[in-house]
Length: 352
Ligand SMILES: Cc1ncc(COP(=O)(O)O)c(C=O)c1O
Image (cartoon, rainbow, N blue to C red; front, side, top):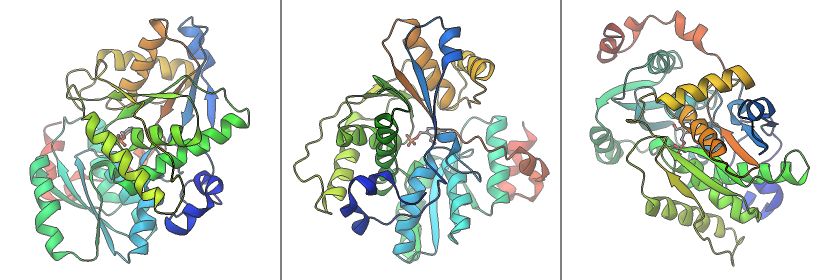
């Protein structure tokens, strides 16, 4: 990509905000006409294919990493440290793209339900050279992360959960500028509503801010993937801090952000990482009608939210933002013997 759509629209930002190219080009959008037909609906359903953000490892994290890795390099950091569940997609994306940019990753890994996806990601983390540290609970991870290691590691760039810092959020502000260009170019209609999974909040934060900065009237509905919803207050603060960071360049001085996002928990199922029944149906429909591959934790629950909205007579056009990597790394994972991973991880493979 020659430069982000955000810098095309606001060149002043380019002088203030470091960025490196990872996406080869804007991700395409597509009319989900077969799924729409299967649901017997007249309301237009569209997808933005952020599974295609990279041919090494795609998905939503890559957009954040274009800004995060650039920030780390500008600060002369020599490694990244971050945290996540055992099957963290964020950790894997950071490891893969960090390695390409000579920034090795140290990862604090916490318990989550063991699925085949989690086991595959553990093997891939090892294969791509992550320094994997099993810390069991989020509390332990935060402790290591916030206090202990920071004291000693001057050359480490610290990424919060999901890469959802102010710098990471810029990745999805930029993504909405890209979408705005695709809409004005006639590639898709302006959506009424965007559906996006919600984990560490960075993706939805960037989308809500981006929608308002571009002047689109589209709203965003965040599908929570755990029955305990994240705090709206925290999300609003993250958005306000991102806006402040952008205003330092002199742009958007008179802009006032008004929260327009919606967070819904009704598709979360029994817990984070637990597959849901309606998610399984959504996965089947996406595969059969659109050849889209979903995973159970984020994307299945989000498309279930879309399907439920359409079945209840919700208005379109809607845009389902597909956030899961689709590069098939299973041939690599299959070659990894779990016994070569650090010892604390063996137990997850033995009991699977
Ligand atoms: C596939 C996928 N979609 C969506 C999300 C949620 O994004 P965020 O953490 O920015 O809320 C994640 C987070 O890990 C993810 O892996």
